[in-house]
Amino acid sequence: MAKLYVIKIGGNIVDDEGKLSSFLKSFAAIKEKKILVHGGGKLATKLAEQLGITQQMIEGRRITDAETLKVVTMVYAGLINKNIVAQLQANGCNAMGLTGADGNSVLAHKRIVKDLDYGYAGDIDGVNAQFLHALLQQALTLVCAPITHDGKGQLLNTNADTIAQEMAKALSSLYNVQLVYSFEKAGVLLNAEDDDSVIPVIDKTKYKELKEKGLVFAGMIPKLDNAFTALEYGVNKVIIGKADDLSSLIVGQSGTSIIHE
Amino acid sequence: MAKLYVIKIGGNIVDDEGKLSSFLKSFAAIKEKKILVHGGGKLATKLAEQLGITQQMIEGRRITDAETLKVVTMVYAGLINKNIVAQLQANGCNAMGLTGADGNSVLAHKRIVKDLDYGYAGDIDGVNAQFLHALLQQALTLVCAPITHDGKGQLLNTNADTIAQEMAKALSSLYNVQLVYSFEKAGVLLNAEDDDSVIPVIDKTKYKELKEKGLVFAGMIPKLDNAFTALEYGVNKVIIGKADDLSSLIVGQSGTSIIHE
Image 1 (cartoon, rainbow over the protein chains, first blue to last red):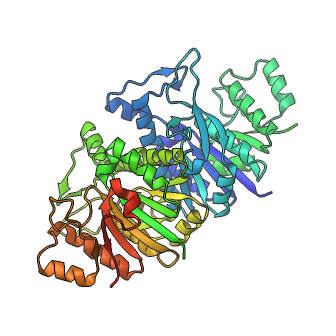
Image 2 (image 1 turned 120 degrees about the vertical axis):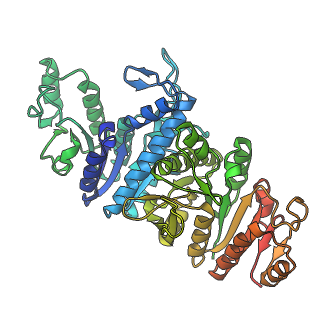
Image 3 (image 1 turned 120 degrees about the horizontal axis):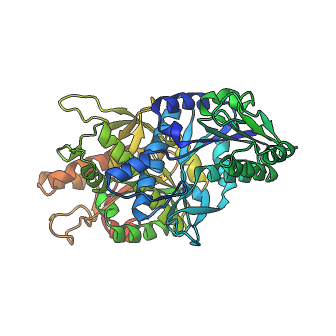
């Protein structure tokens, strides 16, 4: 099977013009097939503030009311997505931008209200792997914004980490998929303050051991749980590390590789 | 050759939620291959105002400074494009949104400054017909926002009428192309105030006659000149008429058809 990289970049890279530009150069240089999933960053919050739309954040999650949905659609699917696509084109990479509505690539439903109403937040029902595959076969590089739809005309704000994970899982029957989470940290760290304390490889046994010894930080546990779920669904490897180090990251020479036993 | 409709909708349709929704229902019902090119409407101007970005309009054309480019990218490629795509999906039409940067579909250059600096306005150099053809072959309906790029990383604000015309011309070697301009008027009118005065068919002889008699309004002349240019480049027919009448418009039962001799 051909190799496919599904690479997620965090909002803090998107927010930093210089970092983004240098990341996109490295990304464009990857010869294998690739999908980039980008987060939103602070631009949406800034625009909402300028427009006087109060942003409600609960446990780090944005509550997406109707006005906020307009803002994130404009910023994620418009400004950020199209600037990334144009920059990749300038770097010789034939990129195409997508939301989940485009080609019905990611179908979701509005999050069911339990204790909390997240508004127009989308939970993913399915990824249209055949459609993404057809585009990848045309030598296109896909750039995915964290916006999905419900198939009934409603756009939905959707977590970029989850989109990356679901795409990686859905495409793993067609490709040898490596899922890469690139952000500002060097990987999974033994000491959150020390970028030199990266754990290079984690398998299930190692993960159990780290958890038992209390060496995994609370914030990292959902990310690692998700990574192991992705492996169970056929993803070949999950890599977590620094966006600045993309070229060494994708070959496993930096960051943390989460692998099968 | 298979039939292809390239249909442009004007900003006033985009601005009116009810009209847009009913237009998209009719559009989705078209069985042949189709491309929708949408204008921007007043939403961008409104957003710019809210953000305190002064809009300079000269002879009905927007001067696109750097801040205005951000606004139009957000509104055209984000908000409007993605809402149209989601609505078409809800109507059973597998739509995909595009700017000229996506798949390098429309390459342009920043308009050369002569008397006036239009800022980040793009004049089209070429349409990637093979790329659009490959997408159309996948049974996708394309939804094009009036944003292009220069291949060097710069997005550019580009006239939607021109994009529709250039796409129609470029695809005319592969399809039997009908170019449809749908707007608020019933067609080319003998009397601008009277929607019943539509001229049903105009060929070059008729056009010459109408111009000689002074029966064509000044504002219509560039549109008609463009239509005849499109025909010269292989487009089969150009239809101008009311967006509300889309289903009768595309079969030539309403509006004005501009045809070869």
